[in-house]
Amino acid sequence: MPHPPQDLALSARLSPAEERFERMRKRIGGYLAPAVLVVLWFVPLPGLPVTARHLFAIVAMALTLWMTEAIPLAATALLAPALCVLAGLGSAREVFKPFADPVIFLFIGSFMMGEAMLKHGLNRRFAFTLLATPWVGASPGRLYAAFAGITAFISMWVSNAATTAMMLPIGLSILAEVGSRQGLANFRATPFASGLMLITAFAASVGGLATPIGTPPNLIGIGAIERLLGYPITFFQWMRLGLPVAILLAGFLVWRFARHCPVPAQSLGNHRHWLETERANLGRWTRGQKNVVAVFTGAVALWILPGVIAALDPQGAASPTYAWINARIPESIVGLLAASMLFFLPAESDGDSLTLEWKDAAGIDWGTILLFAGGMSLGELMFSTGLAHWIGTGLATVFQSHSVVGLTVLFTGVGILVSETTTNTASATMVVPIAIAVAQAAGVDPLKPALATCLGCSMGFLLPVSTGPNAMAYGTGCIPLKSMMRHGLWLDVVGWVVISGTVLLLGPSLTPKP
Image (cartoon, rainbow, N blue to C red; front, side, top):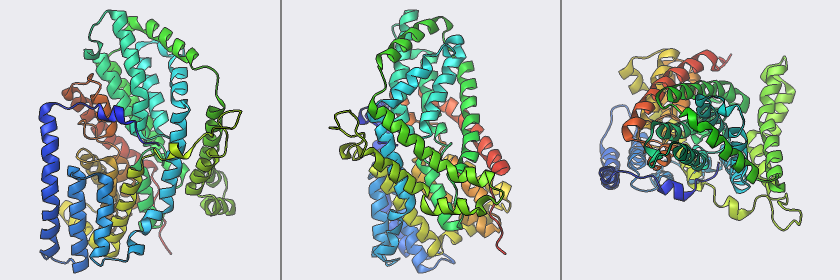
């Protein structure tokens, strides 16, 4: 899951009014965050101890900075734990302990493998091979299906933004061919152009739901559930929930865009010829590509293996084999070992270059890793100081929801709503611990509400600023804002229903302690 190319990220164009709003939002955040910190630091709150009140002030400041982006998100993730140490809420060793959590190293290993895929062009080989198949050209709607399927599949293993960065140039090339075929001077102004760009951005976000490493909120939720509830979510268990959700939402995208933004049928032959030419130009598989595929396939097999053993062994999770594999080769260690292997394998027969070099690894999204770790640190402190319980009790009283079904539906919607105003990663960092606290305060099993919240935080499709893929797609100039909002709202609503229903039907429950 590498860092997305900056040229595409910076190409996201906003209107002058939207640019003024963004500048104002950041300026307001720079003044508002310190004011929030000072006010909440000194104002007593009923039932809240002094240490929890001080943490509340720091968390509120961090949320203000995250939502307004007055300073970089990763900088806020470092500032907030540092202020917690300064406030005496814990020692530096205790507060910064989550920065060395095993989930962090799963993040690092996955990011490095994603960087290797980009370096050796596996994304283009995979995409052009499937798009050029005769099946894709058999009907106009199948182009959407192929594009959504490829994008979603890549996003299962590579970050949403990076996946979008891979697929948008291919989509724009297809649009250029379609425009040339139809004699259109401005092919980007067609409904098909809007549909292809939107389905690329939306499918990249949807595909990330399918695996634990597909998008940062998944790992945030898994880490919070394991730390706060003592329930480890395996790779296979997550896919049992995430994969059906991703398939259903991807299918909805194909249906909606094929219906509302149809593909010009007469242009399909032309783009198939272009795709076949591009595929032929890829040449033979390189040694580096073979190395990445072999290592990546081995990593995925080891990630899934414990779940397969638990499913096949009559003893399930109590199987000695399952326990041994989980103890010796957990997912984080698999990720690190796989990434490390790439530094050993030569990319060329002469051995002068390696499949992955440190200059490549240095380009991964370290900021997201710091943001993730900082959020984990604040989440743990919220529970140790009693702040999470206080917030949970208050929300449970306000919403009067005391069932697993009610809280699952409620916090799926909360996760989606918050993700419209801030990054998915920051949303999961904020909302998942609160969902757990609310469920515990209501006396119900918090596992399903937490899982649904985590999945909901990967939604948010209304605006260009809602997600990185949205911003990149909007920057192509193919998407009217009202079109993004209309289709994005439908996807949010359908996602709310699908996520809530899937988690309630297929989600695990905490085993009551004897």
